[in-house]
Amino acid sequence: MAETNGIRGDARAEWLTTNRDVAKILDQYIIQAERAFVARVQAAGLVLSGELLNSFRHEAATIGEGYVSAKLQMASYGRIKDLQQLNYSRTPPLLALENYVEKVGIGHFAYVPGYPTGVFPRTEAQAIQRIAWAYKMSLQRKPNVKRGYRGIYSDPLLKDVLPYLFKDLATACNLTASRAFKVAFSD
Image 1 (tube, helix red, strand yellow):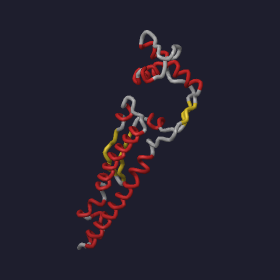
Image 2 (cartoon, one colour; image 1 turned 90 degrees about the vertical axis):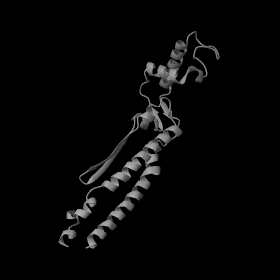
Image 3 (spheres, one colour; image 1 turned 90 degrees about the horizontal axis):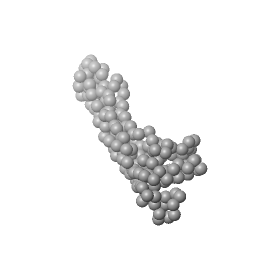
Image 4 (cartoon, one colour; image 1 turned 60 degrees about the vertical axis):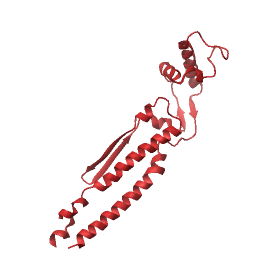
């Protein structure tokens, strides 16, 4: 009976000192969090090149001495896209805006600045340059951009993942405690 009084020294209760159960639960919720973030990004209409969606990376739960950790990463500009207000101190580079106009396509713009509606320059490259330059000048004239909150950065964690994670962790802790009582009082 002396061996079972000190539960940490009991071979049958070795699982109490490791965090395997917590790591399993955390692994499941990291995958759920990634899915929730991807769904919010798609619902907000922020998929232009797919670069933000492809930037999500998660690491499996790491078990250490007295702790369990897991990590979910995404491109940092995902947080910027979620802001309600952007303050531009300078305009983006013209080349970046040209790449944006080229990805979107000139057909999605109402007109080419400097030309009447429905009339386009001789080459598509000229149209892309004119549209990008006009966009750059528009950003320079009106540097503050206000928009509604999209909820892609913290809402998936606060509403869809963490409440259920805490509930499952509490259930796992209760199960662990009941197992410890069973081991302690079985002899």
